[in-house]
Image (cartoon, rainbow, N blue to C red; front, top):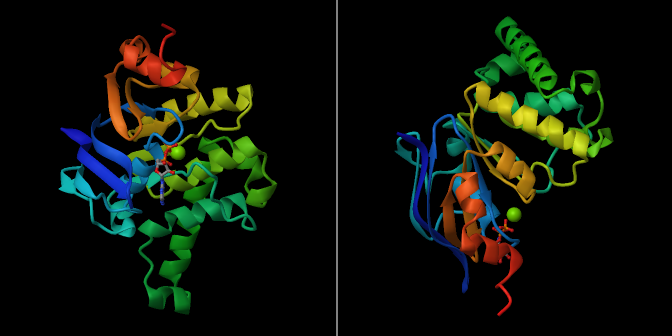
Length: 254
Ligand code: ADP
Ligand code: MG
């Protein structure tokens, strides 16, 4: 059974058709990628999957349940986490606190517990902090845990966003251009990190411009152009698909 399935999803903004009848299937345990030129509709698909936009038409099924038209918090609670194309961290919070915020979705502490600082609430706070430290170590940021997010190097901010997304214990992690702006060393770390995430049992779908990275990491690639799916397959197939070559390099000279 696929973990995520999009069936003819369309999203329009006024007269602009940003996504046009796109179908997509992500198997559990996969590392899959979505590529395509700027404006192809990739981020809009992430926004539809996470409930930021309801699709204009089509169905989205996650883990056996329809999630299109569900609110974002319920989709998050059902096991989908994401990062954004433009980093969104709490700048004046420590790296550790940023990850703890990500755990919030799962916290059991009741309102009374937090108001009264009951032992149960304090124990939960300790566990939350402990898990956040483990996640920071997993993404390679244990030594920077007390720094403000805004003072971290750019690549580390991207890793921190991933740690925060993982804190909600997702089944599916969506990464929107995670390698953007990274130096070669950070990029290598990212490849290892994404493989490590999958090895923990989390399915990964990434949007990426860096073709080398996509070819190295992804098992399945979906290619979008002008809101439509123009190709889907293993990296080697996609790379020699004439429609993909044309979308990236323009029409061949006559
Ligand atoms: P990609 O991520 O592939 O670069 P996007 O999904 O961000 O592309 O955008 C696809 C198209 O939809 C673009 O033409 C973009 O301008 C448009 N678009 C995206 N979001 C909105 C919005 N909220 N309002 C209007 N147009 C939008
Ligand atoms: Mg985008």
